[in-house]
Image: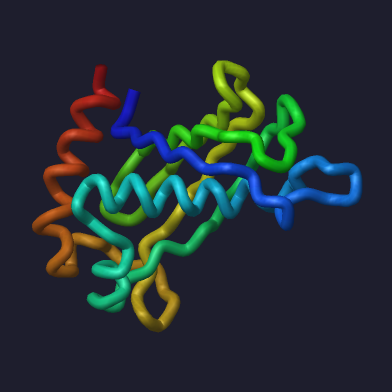
Length: 143
């Protein structure tokens, strides 16, 4: 198991379709909320990456929908760093309504510079704070 975070959110009416079910693309938005909260909990808010001219481009995203969710459902988004290198990060997500798994997903991100080109995060000052996370993740994935 990697580094993880739990985020609680409540489904808003605008996130549902005509059938009263959450529209599928909202899960990808919730994954982003989970990633942002995980970075914030690690004291690495995404704004600091941007301030240094570094971004995280999504190069792969998938979601498996297991059960429908509806307006006013309280959901728990569990976000985990599955794999991390100096050039990319892979996150996994589990979405629960109470104890029921309603969706699961994965996103892969590549570090990019302000010109949109792949970049090595070790070339940026934020690496000093990201390196302990990288080392902890490496140890966790070795077990």
